Length: 195
Image (tube, rainbow, N blue to C red):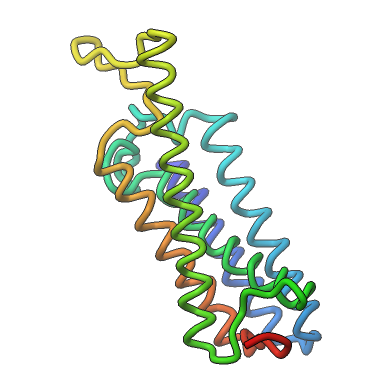
């Protein structure tokens, strides 16, 4: 039985149920956005905590039958980034609606989509740069034994270029999914006070 894949599948099912329930019940838009943001963020936090700290599902040497290996393009870690992208898109729109004087949203939906997706892409790139700096610090300054090909040990935050590109891609796809969820939900993704 592939437990990590079941956790990801269960997370997707819960996410879809929340979206459908909010669609079924007539809830005020900002309140629905708040519920979506809280629930998707909680799912992202649970997936991350389970994979990173409770179980070694997001470890570099971990492979899943259905998700693939973490060192590769997909794997458990990639779905953490996917849920992050969705939660971050919801958070940006929620913050912009909650505090309209600091809004980065535009009057046209396509400009808002571009701004939200680009902001999340920037955050994802900065995160990957932080992982690279952390690896460089541990390898070059602290001389920690993080990699041993003979013993099949790879404790790097960025084990391969493929892993990094997968993380960036899944964050980007998550931001597109998050914005799409907002758009089909009928959430006002335009700014009324700026531009």
